[in-house]
Amino acid sequence: MITGGPGMGNALRLGYGVNAIGRDADQRIVLDFGDDQISRKQHALVTYDPKGRKFYLQHGGGTNLVYMNEAPVLTPTELTAGVELIIGATELRFMPLCGPDFDWQEKA
Figure 1 (tube, rainbow, N blue to C red):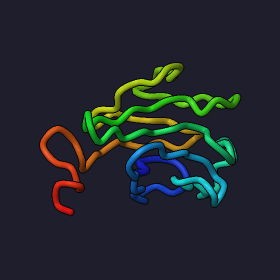
Figure 2 (tube, one colour; figure 1 turned 90 degrees about the vertical axis):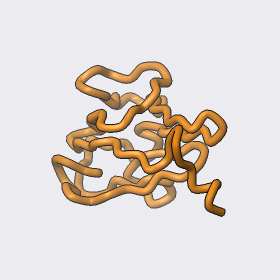
Figure 3 (cartoon, one colour; figure 1 turned 90 degrees about the horizontal axis):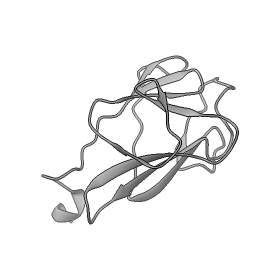
Figure 4 (tube, rainbow, N blue to C red; figure 1 turned 135 degrees about the vertical axis):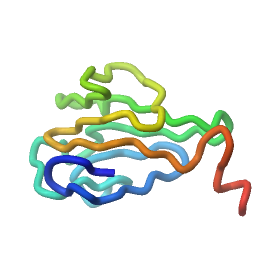
């Protein structure tokens, strides 16, 4: 959920596996709400591991940083419910639907 900056109020849907975040339309998570500080491609990556039922955040490999709870993310780091992320000038709150107690594949 975008909580500050351009796009505030928009919810974003993550998929299984690796989710590249950037401004370009070919990114799995498109953050193209007018924040030019976000890289076009792979500013950050969010990975959902369906076996472990955990999410991880990592830097996308470019020159722009991603922050979790005000600290730069330099190595893959587990995401937990409620953490705050900053990508460019955009603030987000991580609110997962999948986790230890539920996974959509159980319902399929």
